[in-house]
Amino acid sequence: MKTVRLLISALLFIPVLSTAQADQGPLDWEENAEFGVEVAGKIDISAQVFRPTNYKPYLILTSERLPAPVLIDLGKKRVYRLKGRDIESEGSFIKTRGIPHGKSVGSYSMKGGASTFRIDGKRVSLTVRQTLVGEIQPSLILAHSPDYRIRKDAYKPDAASMRFLKTYGTTTEVVVMFATWCSTCKVVLPPVLRVFEDANNPRFNVSYYGIAQGGDEPRQALARYGHDYPAVILIQNGKELDRIVGEPPVPIEKRIVNILR
Image (cartoon, rainbow, N blue to C red; front, side, top):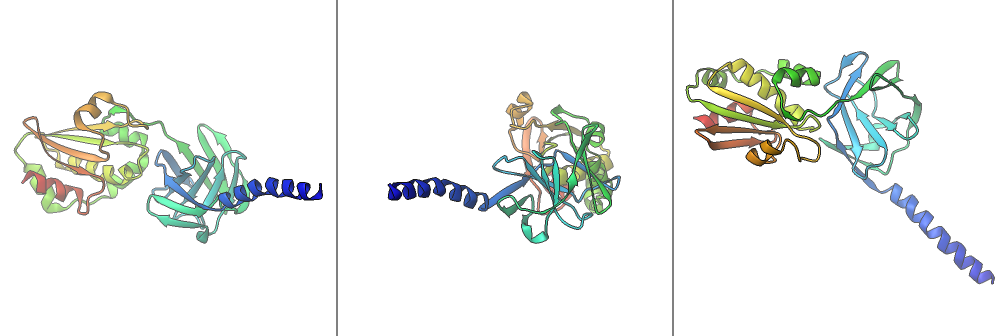
């Protein structure tokens, strides 16, 4: 009987041990750009908000304006200071060893659609922005995502490329596919907005289409132009010349000029 009891105890212990080990295994987190972040009352374009790919209710916030990464427990509404070594950064992704354990710095409050907390005397605010879907005017994109405006205004296009684009004489349809929740789009789209704003050339008919999460809307635009994003598609006489997908290795305006020459 004693042997049976020991065997049962051992069998009961194995799942607990396995779960604990699984929680400490490698965990991938992906950046989600639908969050707008303010630190000390100012828009923070250096901020990145990551969600675990296993959909557990946590966020990790990194920012050049904060002394350390921050873990946000959405279930307990608690905020924890992490150490730099707790995360391994890979651009739009990070890796951790399970859910990292940090030092509690308090709870966060919800007000006006924003989650707010304080760390080292700085007020931090995270706002989930509604996804823009369908054909969207540039003014609405910039109003929706003020960080895009900051990036756009800071971008300095190549002067020679801009001279070409300002005087280009062939009518060209430009279709820009993007998603407001896409981390690459927040880097690519502001320069695109700046380039066509500065070109101010009526020969370019530019349309911007926002894609819903899940990639099923806007149906007509996706059926016509495909599911690439971010993408800048150049069309003349109804035929696609070429498309720029993702973040190009050269300035976007140079890539556009190379296609149009």
